[in-house]
Every structure is written in C-alpha cells, then in structure tokens.
Image (cartoon, rainbow, N blue to C red; front, side):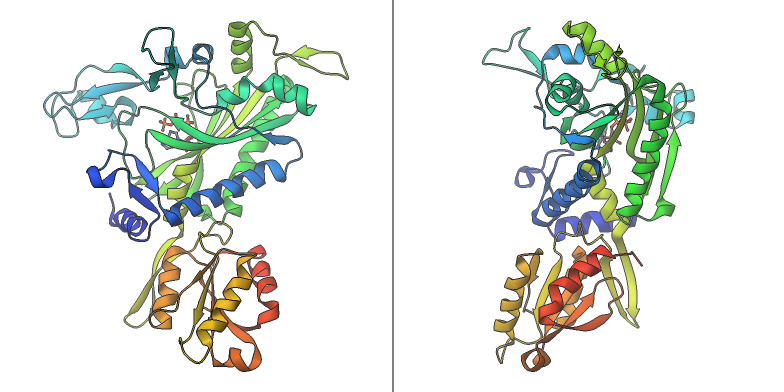
Length: 441
Ligand code: ATP
C-alpha cells in the first residue's frame, strides 16, 4: 500500500470514520465498522445517490427487498452455477489468489508472486450459504444475496401493478450484499460484506443501446456533480471474454485509487436474461403489456451498479490533501462536497470568557435546525480549524468581540480558508447558498 493509503487509513481510524471489526478481539479479517463520522458520511452519500436517482427522475422508484430470498432465485439468476472466481494457491506458503487478478506472467509460468509453484485453478462460488430454521438440512439452505439486483427483478410485476409506471422506468435500491471473496484487501475497497447502490432500468428491447449510452453518461456526470476529480475517473469497457453471463455490453466506471485504477461502478446491458429466467423458473408471466400497442414482451434491463462502501473510500481518497499553508505550516484537508461532509458547520467562540461561549452556543443551536453542527471551544482557534479541515467540515463560524457588538460572525471556508463577515440573521441562508454553489477548488 502506498503511503498515501496508509495516511488515509490512519485518518479514518484516528478521527472515527472506520474501525476494524471486533478490534478488541484482535479484529475480523477484512470486516469494518463505520464510526460516528463514517456513518454520517456513508448515509449522506447514500442520500446523495438516492436523490439523484429517484427524486430527480420522475420514472424511478425505490425498493427495499429482503437480504434472504427464495433459493430458486439464485438458480434462476445463474449464481449457483456460475457466480464463481478461479482460485489458485501458492503451494509453499498457501497464500490464495484470484486467478484473474494475477499478473499475466504469473499465470503463464504458474508461479506465485513469491516465485513458488501455483496449484491448479479451481472454481470457488462466492455466495455465503446458511440455513433457515433450527435444523441445518438440505432444502432449508438460503444464500445471503451477492447483489441487490435480484430483489428488484422478482418484484418487477409488483412494482408495475402498484405504481402504474410505463416503460422506460427504473427501480432503485440500496442495501447490503455478501460475497465470500478469495482475497479481501485495500481497507474497505473489497470486503465480504458491503453495500450497493443499484438501479435497474427497464426498457423496450429495441431501445436498449440508447438507454445504455444514456445511463453511462448520466453516471459519469453524477461523479462530477459529487465533485470528484475528473482526471481520476475513466470508463473501461469489458471485452467479449470478460462479460458476465447475463451481459450484452458492460462498462466500468473506474477511479484511480492510491493503489491504482479500480472499478467503482458497473453499467450493464443485462438484456432480457433476468426476467426471462425468473419467468421460466417461477412459471409466472413476467411480460410487460404495452397498453398503446397491445404488445406483450419481456423488457431489457440496463443496470447501474455501484458500491456504497467502496464509494466511501473513493470520496475520502479523492478529498484527501496535505497542503502547505505557510512557511513551516501545513494542514490535512478533506475537500468533501458539503452535501456529504459528516459535519457541515463548526462553531467556535474565539475565547470562552465575556459571554462569547454562551453566544456561540446560542448560534450553534439556531443552526442545528438546518445543518449538522459541531461546537468546539477548546484550544487555539487555528487548531480548532485544522481539526475540522481534517474531517472535511466545509464551514467554520467564529464568534468574537465584534459579534457581541454588531451581531456579525466570521464565516470561514474550508477549501480557500477565506473568511467573510456575515450578519447572524443572514448566516443560515448564506451557508445554504454556499452549499448550492459549491465548486471544488
Ligand atoms: P470484481 O470482479 O472486482 O469482484 P464485479 O465486477 O463482480 O467485481 P459487480 O458485480 O459489478 O462487481 O458489483 C457492482 C459494484 O459493487 C462494484 O462496482 C463495486 O463498487 C461493488 N462491489 C462488488 N464487490 C465488492 C466487494 N467485495 N466489496 C466492496 N464493494 C464491492
């Protein structure tokens, strides 16, 4: 891992974004808990996505399906048969690798990165299996879902009937997914339990290419809106031999993490594969009736599938900067978009005495209605600013002696460190405006 990645992991722990799971017992490999700031960031990121997909599109609705589903779902979807990675082992150290993640040279020579012989590749299904009910017996097996998408497909008919949506339309869902990954690494990038942000868009089969292109563009645009550096984002097309069993076309949106370019989101043309298979396996007619033409057909699906927990790492990595601000003075700053920053406004009395602390408390309470606030009166003001910069708080409000006389405060912008004087009655409105017009410097 690069130093930059070490710095990010250390900040996440030190400031309470992400902790190792069950740390007091020595930790569980590759499982992570989201601390007070991490859960705020994750929730906000989820809301940002949800608003973008559902609120700003009048033909996309939400769903929250159960994690456990009828076992036949995973037979129909093809996961029981083919949701597998090829596993190889270093025959000396027993270290395991995903075959498709090994460098070409190692695969050709069948040697591990340590130079030892590799075992023959064997299939390893990624689904976690468990049992429903008190007895572990065949027939009661269920799987923890490896993707949220299937919950959407099996509810397709329910949603059409209850919401009276017409094609094209989408169903969005956020939730946990589980994969027994052969190798988990890079902090929260690849874990066995993670969260996905998925949207399935149902279209007429003759329009699949058009909507595929549309969603590809929209999803890249979303990351730009989120303030992610465009030079760290790119598309990567899946070649014919890389396509998943259900896909006709697939593009990944990749981000340049400190450990290299990696997938952030997949945009897939899944054709009519999923609904056709569920129709066959369930015996239910899942065709869509076009009222205007009287045609019945199985819609094609364009899927946008992103990782929420992976996005948390991406936004932190993208926002993280160490900068010199004066001779012998530097700061760590997280340039998070204000809409996802865990705390929006820090409130600081310049000093505790002469009624400044009480006035600062009052102002903070007023701001709470509209923003997540944090009150801090301890230490030099510069240090208090730095503590907030480090966790990405976009605005700082300082109460000083002028506040007591003229009812104005200093509003400090995290990115530029610029300070402006604002009358207290106009403060909330001014912050709202700054959030709306936010552009990353
Ligand atoms: P890979 O080949 O890297 O294992 P994938 O191409 O199978 O992943 P998808 O099935 O397309 O991944 O999953 C959609 C999204 O879900 C990914 O872009 C990623 O953001 C997220 N995701 C998938 N697996 C994991 C994981 N193990 N940990 C965290 N996020 C994940």
